[in-house]
Length: 573
Image (cartoon, rainbow, N blue to C red; front, side):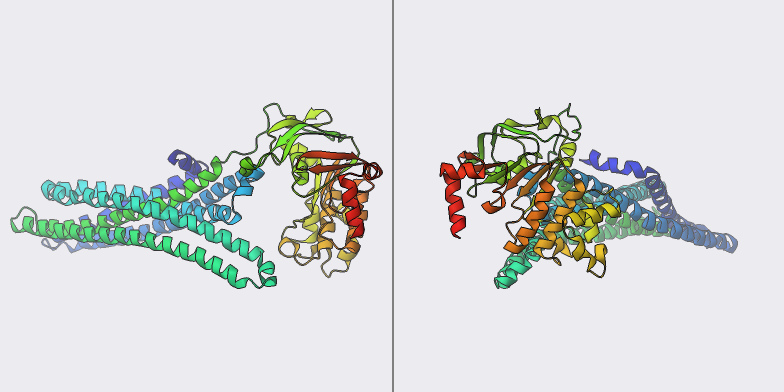
């Protein structure tokens, strides 16, 4: 994992090198002060060398000014480097997310994904900047201090530095407890985010059913679980920092005691004793940095490990010899297709050995009771899910022999639950083809019978439609989604209950647009209202047992089977 983390420094190695150089110079500058102080006390003051003292005062001022600029660079450009690494990790995680199969999103909460990409990468950014810098400065300070102090008195230096491993050992042991507490905290943050995202998205439902208190209770329970995990984390952190603080104080006590004894017995001078105290005061800061680094390391590595868990999810893969699908004719054949969802292994197959042939340019309707696999069948054509058995052919070629990207570009889908992005009308229509001109966008809107309404809006096509298009009616949202398909102009069209959520008048208007959209295309229609598919070339009655009936509207009525019963029931309604 460390190797994977380190490679993110590659694109920023020049900035990283400059940051480390500045950190090195800061560490060197810090070691001047004790040595100059020692020389002033032991040499310049007794010899009354005011000129040399003045020189070193000016020199120290110059060193402090240099430190100012070095620290400015570290604080500014060092954080910039951390943010750039954060953006690289976020970009990789999001790009990977775009290639994950639908099964991943079926089982993973949106808030959990958001927590990993947003919150965890923030901690990674802090580690990326402060981690190497703190270790480097601390190492230089400790090694430099040890060597300089050894020149004055090796025994006293060894006595003082013998305390450092005790301090570091304590910090490492306590860090393990911080580790598990930190991971649990992040899990709870993801759960709270998921609950919050779900509650906000469903606020209209909770208000309509007067269940706001229920949602508040759910959020309270999740928040309390987070607060409990955070309390444990803070307890571990308190043990960590209070313990290390005590050891720091004991280190200073050891220095004063041992240094006092050595001075009393003339083993070191007063100037050397002063230098020891100043050096201990200096390298306690690096020690604190090392101790703080353990927390940064824990938070950063925990966040990075959660990102790596996401990156470890297997993305959608094309076969090695997959080729690009050009404009197909649209003939689709299902051969012994078997499928079940990952989470429903014990429930049996949704589809079992299903066989179905759809001619190019033909409109085929899928009808039947819920749970028969109608929508599932539609999702298998663009390879949103992988088959458990059999194959699907497009113009006689297995769809697995095509790249997913080129396959999906040839398929247009209009669903009952229309999703619009939080943007303008223009942007949502242009999702059908970002290369489209303004004229092509307007033409698509005209074909979907939505252009006239858009013209009445103050901002026209630049009208902001709110989250998921909430500022539009259901029919208007559906028309925009249809305009999107007109702009995409695919040879294969899937209409998955595209009008079932609309009132009869709106449905009739939308149906006209869909009929126009279907002309000349291979069209697969999932419908509950049989009146909308009576003119289909072929109607397939799909149940949990497979295809029960197939034929035209008139043929199925004459057989007096399931379709006949469904038709009569809807006509009675």
